[in-house]
Image 1 (tube, rainbow, N blue to C red):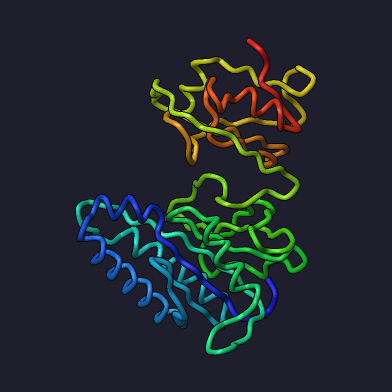
Image 2: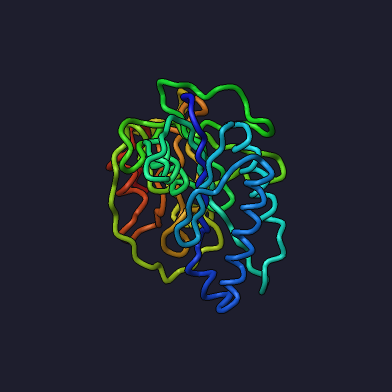
Length: 281
């Protein structure tokens, strides 16, 4: 990452649902959440410089301190005994770069980028971004970076490499980044409708239709191409996603697929995949 300040943005995932679950207790949970995060900022040398709704923004002079803070915050949020058995999940986005102060506010692309990186994350996840011309420097003080690939973030010029900071005692498996377009991919808008048949798991949904996934020419998959069926990040009941890997690297992701209906897996995959298709059965 380029030299400069490090900006850390947080946001609560599913806040509307939490309001419904906790009712009047949500305001207390929100205050506790803010107190926990501010304590993490203070311990790690950060300073809150703004907030909006349930989102907080902090700045650090050292990138390592921001990463340590992000891990500490996720641990404390996850381990807190929230009321009514609720589970509060926080997205965290971290970006480093040059910024200046104007009118008492931080101004610069990294500030906006941190917000977009946070928006791309899922609850419990820590995402970092780096300009492709400025490789990430070194390793985090704890944990490892997982390279998720290069994406275009809304309103940010040029692609960014998204890195997930992972540690053993926190969740590590998340759906594809939200509100971000994989570099070289195409944004596909599809309609969704509820499926009255509720499946137990995405794999059971796929197995019910026995989809046969083959290479573009109809032959058996080879050459390092693999397809994995996993749980969808959103969509109708029983929706699933297909992840296409080439030599172990994720190349394509098709999310919110169903067996038949408006998001039929065969129609979506066969129209857009550069590596596989679902054969007629």
